Image 1 (cartoon, rainbow, N blue to C red):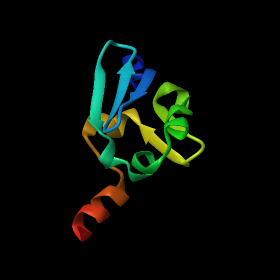
Image 2: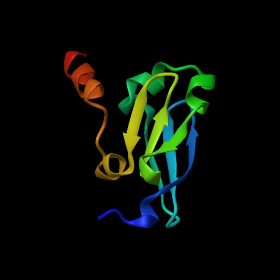
Image 3: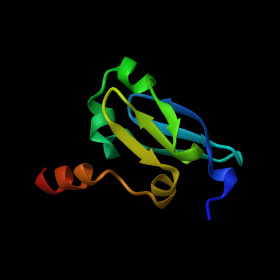
Image 4: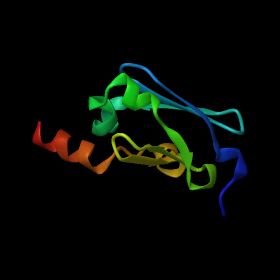
Length: 88
């Protein structure tokens, strides 16, 4: 069962980090490189996000990216980020 404290309250992006604030006061900060669609997005596309999945996810409609709090807490990069790392 989902913990209401793990619902997204805010999202911020820097040039190289994704920071997600949760209802229980925690902040998750992960490398933007984990999410190639966001890394390659414009600032305007990155800022156009919405809370999804009853508060437990984030959606960027302009780049068709969806992230879950569960995945962020597990430290799980996007599958395409893993594949890119293997090729590099």
